[in-house]
Length: 265
Length: 277
View: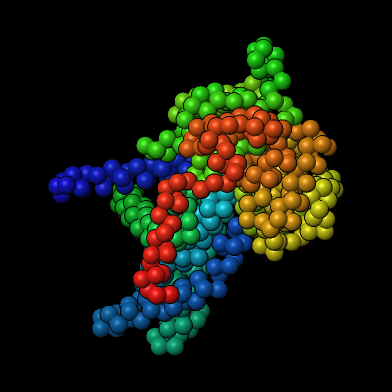
């Protein structure tokens, strides 16, 4: 096959995959938004259970990683700023980089590792054990029953986790600022608040909602399309992680570009 | 709105729970079921028999609407599953009870929650009422007191019985069993057979059992369908099948191996002789 044909086929496959993810998300959103209006059951209990597992369960590891990232950002920026005699701007550098980019991205990656892979493994195992068939013959749509509560939980919990990661990142930066850059804790926080605009936080949160939707769609799609057998479930889990990371970075690029366009007008 | 199909208008459909007409199912290029046609009367217990890979599980999946046929018709309570809308299929499936080969109990729920699930999803019953129904259904299958167990804590036979309890929750009109005795010891398998007979006597349900266990099929079935390589080989009452002179039927019922499997049985002797074992 020629290079052109290979690239063409890969592009078509990619578009078909994105189309499948969009359909899955659309059906889940219909189950969340339209079906309850039509008097169908809204599974709040399952969504809360998912939110606890994906959100609350991720707080300890996310806190640690975000704190370290904030500290690393402070160290890296101080290294350059010191040479320019602008060490006082370390709080600005940490605040902006963490809220706009690093916190949403790190949160998404942590959630992919914990929950995106778990979605693929859970649904893939259910498929192998005929549990998805059992749902269907019980007149329960697997997408309504399994995917929709996960989507709701992730779309709500990702912004919450990102906000927490913002805070922990700034705290990491403050640790360096207070111990090595001549800040007091209060002056560091004031400098942070001065540097930040609400737009920085809001754009990060909008991205995090999109990341939550993408991670759920990819994880659940990989689980639903897993082959029969333990090895296939393992592959679908790996695939869910790799594809989720790629999709999250791609969505990040698109949204950052859109925010750039709207900001520069 | 969902309505039961018009069963009275078609004389042939009167009193029939399931009708299968010229059913063909393929997996890619491979034809799994070829021109399958038979009926199941309401209240009848029918056993679908066949060797491994004969297509009996695919046939069962087609009856539940889990496999889309290439051609042919599957009529259940006057509805053609091939043309039915998703909503009507969902309503029809509320009248099904299915016991899968491995039980297919939801691992994230307790046994009680598994049994309660159809009631929680499809009825407005209160929790206390659901708890009573769950207890009754588990009692019916001899699993009283196992409400709070996880499926992983149950033995193979108990899992199958719990799956039957879940299948019975909505008081189904048609009960499907996929290999109810497979992988169980003879005593537990006999217990499952006894349970099916008990359900048959108590509720007069239409029961479709897919199995390759001959003793079990002869015990529970009113009629039997023998499938081989995706085609119906024989159909009739247990007595009719026993009396059938067709060689392939005799071979299956007599548990005689295929000639190609036994043709080179001296191979092992030759191999071990060479090794002077």
